[in-house]
Length: 126
Image (cartoon, rainbow, N blue to C red; front, side):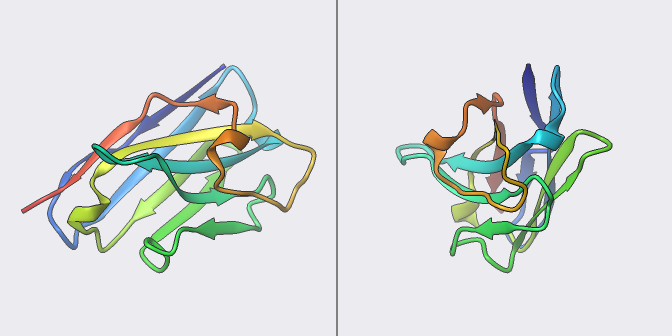
């Protein structure tokens, strides 16, 4: 059972990235998925989440209108599209998943997830 994040990198302010979170060893259909980030010296914070159905999404206020989460259950992958990036978005981004019977709910509480990826670094700098 593994989650692997890819797509991080160095980007200039105002730029864009697409992060991918791909599961292996299990089917993401039965899991809600969240994205979290941790900047140096700061606590991990929830960024976004998506329900099993994909019909419910949530975003932190700091990224609302700039980030978009989506899922492709055929590819067993959840994406986080990062647009209009700011230096304060610099962090290691993690995806996490938890199996649930609920199709239409999600949350950004990290203790509510029990499968985590290794993280991918996003650096926003000119």
